[in-house]
Amino acid sequence: MLLDNHNRHINYLRLAVTDRCNLRCNYCMPSEGINFVKNDKLLSIDELITLSSILVEQGIDKIRITGGEPFVRKDLMVLLRHLKSLKGLKDISVTTNATLIGPYIDELKTLGIRDINVSLDAIDRATFERITRRDQYDVVHENLIRLISEGFNVRINFIVLEGQNEQDILSILELMKHYPVSVRFLEEMPFNGGSKSFQTIKWDYKAILKHITDAFPNYVKLESPKTSTSINYQIENHKSTFGLIPSFSRTFCGTCNRLRLTATGDVITCLYGKPKANLRDIIRTKKSSKGVKEAILKAIASRAKTGFDAQKEHATVFDNSMTSIGG
Ligand code: SAM
Ligand code: SF4
Image 1 (cartoon, rainbow, N blue to C red):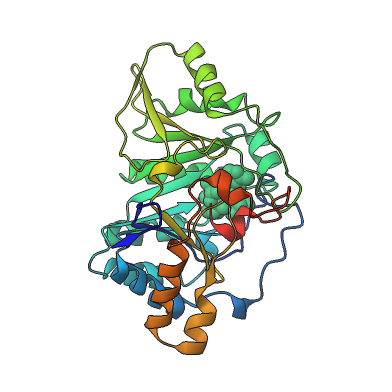
Image 2 (spheres, rainbow, N blue to C red):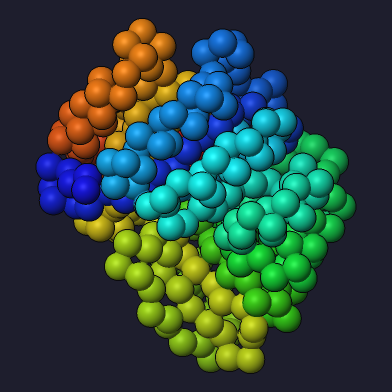
């Protein structure tokens, strides 16, 4: 079992399988993209398999595949098939922009990988294209509806962006009220590849809740697991639920159970902090699991208590993009 220096049980790995992406969401990276790393710096599928197996041996029982866009990686299913075979791994999920998932839906279903988070920050086509800087609206909607109708457990991640998509908050709830999905509204974080250094945000979770409940006053708060990052609600007569994720306000650090591994093998113990070790270099040089295990134990033994403490590791601007950290 992995315990950090604040006695938090770490059982959840967010595994970024690539830093590449076919969209250019403006809150995530600049229009020209970021300096994507060279192919040989990315973990190979064999290395991803090795590292995830070691982490599961150490006590990780939940893995979320993220990126970049996971499905730009043509060999992704090889990793997922392997993860499915790992004893001790109870929960496998994927976060995707839903542009490229179509051809893989049948196999995901067969494998029993049913928890899919779809990032969708607009239901209006023009707003979607402005935010993502790409013309992929139709395929995203088609895949989203297909995932829902084929019985996947779908959660929509919607980042509320000042001046960009506020008008879609209520519309997405209206549209989704007919479907058994969860729409989670996230606060924007300053990881867009370099230009953001905001100290406050207009759309924090309290402002989002007020905006929603002014329009839908009949709602209930739902029970959520202790380690959940979202505070969840349901509006009367809606099949869907909605959640608020205080990713900028960071109210959930006290129960954080997460570890992140980037596509280049960096170990990140808090989204707001700096990498604490590089596992790619260790497996490429030492070729043994012992060094990897030691590096993980060392990293989680010096975890910042909160995202605010971790933030002090940076100067004012976060030069990182979420596409390299994995969200
Ligand atoms: N490409 C996939 C996707 O978009 O779902 C997976 C990777 S993406 C980096 C993971 C999550 O990070 C997405 O839900 C995305 O919305 C979120 N994200 C990216 N940049 C963010 C930012 N600046 N603030 C908050 N969330 C962000
Ligand atoms: Fe790509 Fe996801 Fe970043 Fe959008 S949020 S640019 S889909 S990695």
